[in-house]
Amino acid sequence: MVLSFFPPSCTSNMEMYHVLEPRRAEMGKNRERRRRSSTDSQHQRMVANVRERQRTQSLNDAFACLRNIIPTLPSDKLSKIQTLRLASSYIHFLYRILEETDHLQEHTIQEAEIVKEEFIHPDALSYAFSVWRMEGEFGH
Image (tube, rainbow, N blue to C red; front, side, top):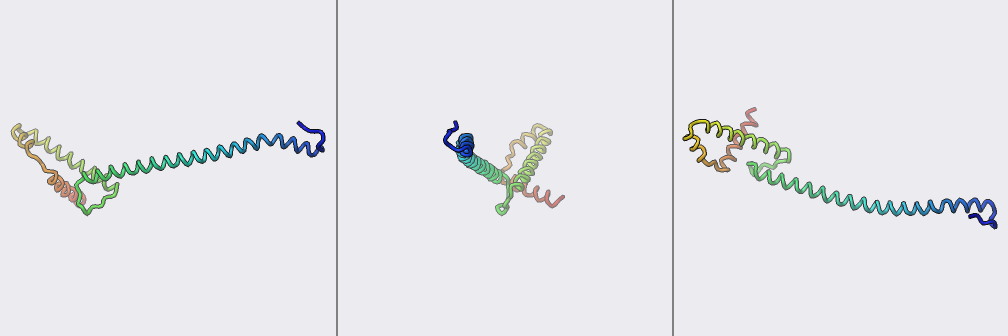
């Protein structure tokens, strides 16, 4: 709507103003959306950081449990990769013990019963694994 008492140069500016006014209002809304979206982004980032910290803590707890299970010397300060490699070696070592026990069970039933009755104390396994581990490191 153009008013006739304005000079033509002003009316064209007024028309332009009326055309631009809704855009400016939209820009204000966009800024508000950006502010809200920025706040949302910050919140999402914060939540993601918390989730990542929890995941990392959970992983560290699992490695601590694994380090407690694997027989090592108290002086051993194992990294995560060393812990995984040592755990893999320990599993292989225990598997070989089970294989040998299975092989022994193929002998007479009487001999197998004797083997079953024998109890291997975890400390003995720990020592045996340490010896086996050292042989593996230096023997190859």
